Image (cartoon, rainbow, N blue to C red):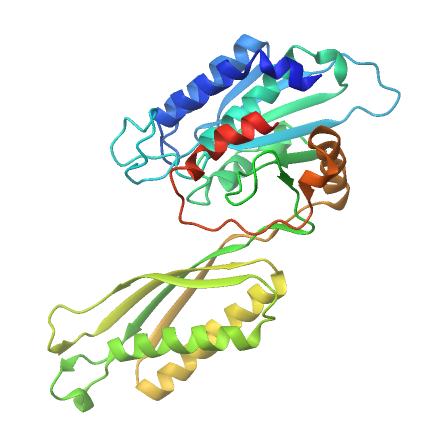
Length: 351
């Protein structure tokens, strides 16, 4: 039934996708995107609430089907934001905003949710209870969900269950993957400042070599991480920024390192955090420096609820066939090619 209906709405979905892709906005600046989503939902007859968590949008629809059980409240969530980078894909609908790019497929996620919202608005008799389409800002900076929660999202709009999807490069078109257990890794920010007595490069023994200490810390913690966590547990520790020094022959008084930690298991996350602290103490002793380590929790491991996973698996098998459904998908792996960036369109066609 849905496939037949979608054939007449595919052109509208692609028009939405191209419009959003041409006008990407980064976290908490998604004013145009939020307005576009709100306009579509209002036109469909949804009760629309804007400004949740800054630029978040929620559309609520009540079904008309009869129910002999307590009414359920289902949430469907998508993201609004893009990335602060220049698009170089050459797509006919490339970004028209410098240094802004929907490189992670959130435009496709938004359009997929809007398409589902359109279907339900014209088929209220197929469900009972309430459905809430939640459009979250600032996913890329890992702050938008918390902002919506802090703004009373679930106090105002309680959900019994909530569902979301993500495009998955490497997954064949028309296939669906529903992870068993961990769906998304945890995220933590790591900030390290290594301080010591600066000195001339010709006489390192008269001070502390903070640059060498930083290199030793990074090397040691990366090596040890592979030995203190289960190799079968997905754990990624990366340092993407190191700053320090003003001249090639001066050992600086401080070096700053910034990184991220992502884990698919809570136990591995705790073990790596302990390793980061223990390594700091060891480097202080060996190199005669002081280390200020700050680990900022951003998001926990996102676990799929077993009942919800089973429901999605069953539905996906009915729609695309059991041979195209997996409960153990491979993790999303960058970098993204121009072909990958069209996955949003592929997802729409595959629904």
